[in-house]
Length: 397
Image (tube, rainbow, N blue to C red; front, side, top):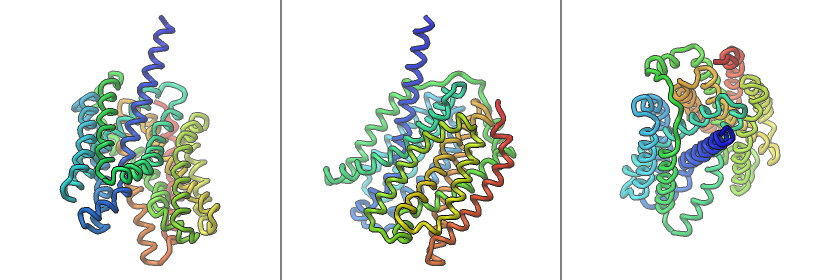
């Protein structure tokens, strides 16, 4: 009897990891928009400032979605929220594929799919952490789950390009992905569940966390440190070409190495946190990235710039992997979605602001280096604040 129950639990955990992993892969479709841009511009006769709006506005929808996930989970329950998430992602992708004009395309992709994208990401990571929170290996599991996002980008980006060329139609991949989203979310709705918990009201959950000193300091750490990777990743191709003078193909290869580093490092960081703890892991990685940032001015060859941007990928991997573990450890499983959603919002803000620092630096000075110096100083400030929050991160519930 004990053996059969143990086998059942292993099977249940395997199903949870698999479905949560696939949900994160579906959310990675967000970062495929750049593949569609030339075709959208050609068909709708719009410029770059309009064609990038679906991606830009999706980031705003992400923030709205992150901040409302906990409310909807409390109000609807996990099963109904999963159903709503599946409907939004499937409908958003399908309507985007069928859009007769740019306005409907923006609404469908940025807001309908974008909100479902937000819910799916928070639910998938939170369920994974909850399933393994009392078990050894929760860091590794979290790393595997969040690595699905980078893996999705790495695999689906060339696949999307191939599908567009094969069908001579940019809309068909969106239809295919909408079917994939419907399939994954149908199985997730039917099979995923979480243990019953004492309901946490919105005021005692979301708002209490938002007002807490712990949240303010931890969110500042994540925001300030994410700025450096946001600057590098948001300007990756032009930055590499400007510094090293390489051709677009080589710059793309370095970008692929960046993505591969993100996949591997997320799993590795989760494993390392099992032994060093969250706080020590962050201190070690932030320190290494700070040294990398200070040396960035000297990265003028292909091998050195590859090392430089790879450390940037490791920085963001640390933040995105350890954020849900921090949320669970500081605020407990009952408030995990609320706390994690708020920490994700801080990360997204860093991802949005970082590229702006780089872009403004390039426009005003003709170089990315002043922006890199500013991001380095803010990274150092984040490390200083981290020393103030170590006691919160190390505290056990």
